[in-house]
Amino acid sequence: MTSRTPTDSARDIPEATVARLPVYLRALTSLTEQGIATCSSEELATAAGVNSAKLRKDLSYLGSYGTRGVGYDVDYLRYQIAREIGVTQDWPVVIVGIGNLGHALANFSGFRSRGFRVVALLDADPARKGEEVAGIEVRPFDEIDTIVRENGVAIGVIATPAHAAQDVADRMVACGISSILNFAPTVLTVPPGVDVRKVDLSIELQILAYHEQRKAHGEPL
Amino acid sequence: MTSRTPTDSARDIPEATVARLPVYLRALTSLTEQGIATCSSEELATAAGVNSAKLRKDLSYLGSYGTRGVGYDVDYLRYQIAREIGVTQDWPVVIVGIGNLGHALANFSGFRSRGFRVVALLDADPARKGEEVAGIEVRPFDEIDTIVRENGVAIGVIATPAHAAQDVADRMVACGISSILNFAPTVLTVPPGVDVRKVDLSIELQILAYHEQRKAHGEPL
DNA sequence: TAGATTGTTAATCGATTAACAATC
DNA sequence: TAGATTGTTAATCGATTAACAATC
Figure 1 (cartoon, rainbow over the protein chains, first blue to last red):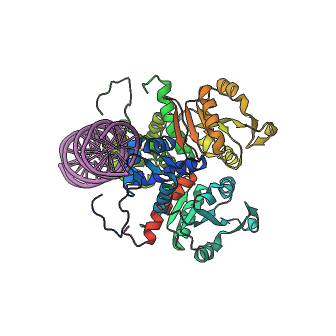
Figure 2 (figure 1 turned 120 degrees about the vertical axis):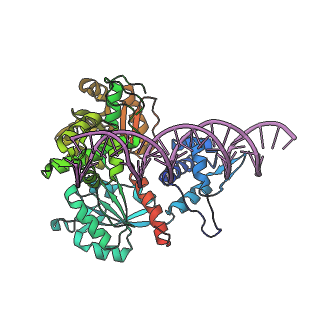
Figure 3 (figure 1 turned 180 degrees about the horizontal axis):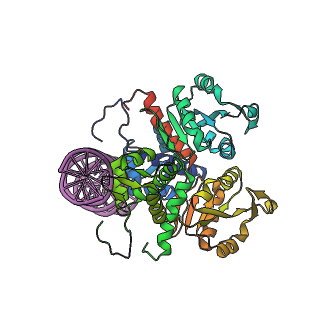
């Protein structure tokens, strides 16, 4: 860390570390459920699937939440990481595109338990209005402005076909959403200040295929 | 590139590059569909959402498939990348866990068009035997050994609840699968030589939440 | 105190980027 | 030839890792 004042509690956390914090959070939750109150960096690292040097380095960006010679208090560390990520309160989320994938996302129970709350399901097809999925009413896409404003939505999920995704993203940005999780297999263009993350099934499979192909040809591991 | 013999056509492609090749592939397909036969690194980079220096560096690991002063032949480059990734033939794939997500995956049309073929849908619940999803019969999980052997399956997709995922992975590995795409929110332990990639909705959302939280607090972008 | 384990340092490794020589 | 654009170099930046001093 270069410089820190007491007020800006934690700055400059590397992206690679940010991406692992949710993994640590989950591992800690799992330890709590097993009734484990204290753990070493070695134990937590194993539960999270990383090595302990990386874990300690990552945690060092947040502060000093362990005790030398002892380890970490599971609940305390869990809370500190949750606070750092920002999931001590719920984030309202909208899902756009209620096809097969949208259905699956709406029904995903991990949402609620991990700091997110689906406030609306939106679909471009007006005929679907009033339909209910996972106890949430499907509403017309045009209502997005109202819904975002009324609920203070900052995060949007795109589960539409590829051809519709850019328009949906534009509309999301226009009504104030500044973080987008995109499941549509297309590159989105958004203004600076808007974060986009993508989840792409066929890209993941192709990465596996690349390595698989090399295994098959007798390459060294 | 350190050293290459004529026979080992392309070695030592960095992981970061491998992860982007599918993105280039998609961008090239899209250019073809637009009737564009030739493109510069700048144009392709824009379509893929990266900068042109990175694109050229990435392509340089595969070989020299462009023409200085001219650019790339879209179809030719597309084929070369597809060959490098290994998606010039179809890869047989099994999906385990036919809940909401499994349904969505089974119906995902991008599978077929991008080098993969779902040969079986497997579910632990014997009552679901005979059910049909996306024109594919749901079969009991126990038949996995037969199915993998008969179809030469190397890639498995796990779409089960978290608590079942490790058992499914063990069973996949036991019958010869060496690449796993895991949608269950849990860390999988597998032997060396087996590749696992994970897709995790709540982790992606938490990464967005972290950045969103900082925006809200007036941090610089 | 002795043993254990954190938090940090410093070295290494890998990825990105800008610039430009090569060359169509 | 002149203009355009690739493929490569080298510098920079960020991530990982091992080792260990600090300290409970």
